[in-house]
Length: 451
Image (cartoon, rainbow, N blue to C red; front, side):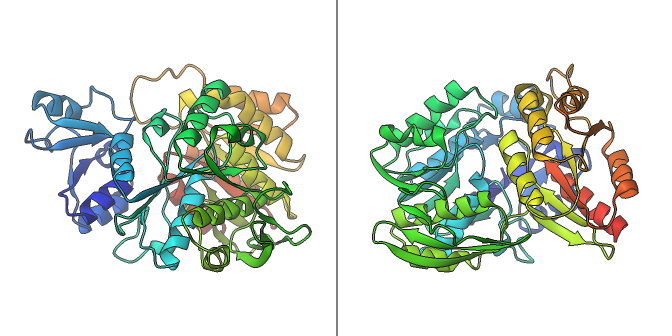
């Protein structure tokens, strides 16, 4: 919701809002920063809805029973979902550049937006994460950039089916794997998305994504492993470090090679970089310029975000991993270098845990070694009517059954105590989860204790 609010206010709208987290006293610094930027904030009790002329935009997490929604209905206010509003802004721009896929959307959106910005194209960027390159003292939560109306870069979401609302000039597809919907539903949604895109940019390394290529009109492919990918990597050129990497990018349209340095670790981030380069090429940016721009990309908050390394050599990392593919990418990046991994996972809801719990457990068991440990607290729950009969205990049991080592500790604060107790020099502690900005504060507090 925040990036959309920032874009609307940047275009001259009056924007006010409410959030149950604010009413619960959570993240006071964040809400204070929003008020300092000129957003009017109200309790979520209906008091902010005073006129039928107002438009109510609500995320999918806001039920019809919430007082703001009830009051808007009484006053006959126009109501839009978050995705409906974003698709209107996207589809009415000169050209919409969409980033879709199960994993990596926010990172590629940030990379692509940064390339276009660095090349002087003045894009408007709608992202689900804070982009470090655009953070400023007066804009600490830079999850949006208000540029011109000719280019609109946005991640688009398949989890609620709203990807169907977008009509991309450039439609990027990163991967297709189990998350909020069945594979059959995902193939249909992503296939339709590619068929609506003027130019489709497809990950040739992902079999499910590549299988949808015949549905696209004009295509640019990218990939690390696929030798026929149009934007690829020269074999043997990848140099990996624990916090950054380098490679030779090849543009197989003309055979030219370009030296890429990337301030992010992990093969998945190299793939993300290729996706952004290919997307920029579809928008008319030369590959050489895109590669040059990415050398200055600083990454996103909560995407393998290194909080610090203590004097004793314990590193704390804040990460958005919340589905099997995202968690696997983070764990593989960590396991590519020496040191024990202590992984704390906070499930982002009871529904997602039921949907992907078995795959998640298998990921933790297969990606980690005998020395590593996994910790789960209870799922995030901020209210509502969701079925809470199955929780983290089931996932811990599944991890153990698959040969891993996991513990269920109901309260997050107690997990922090346990991690501080057992951490030793050389350990990497990774804090994983979504839909809860207080996880970053938890990671910082844990690091402070260790330091």
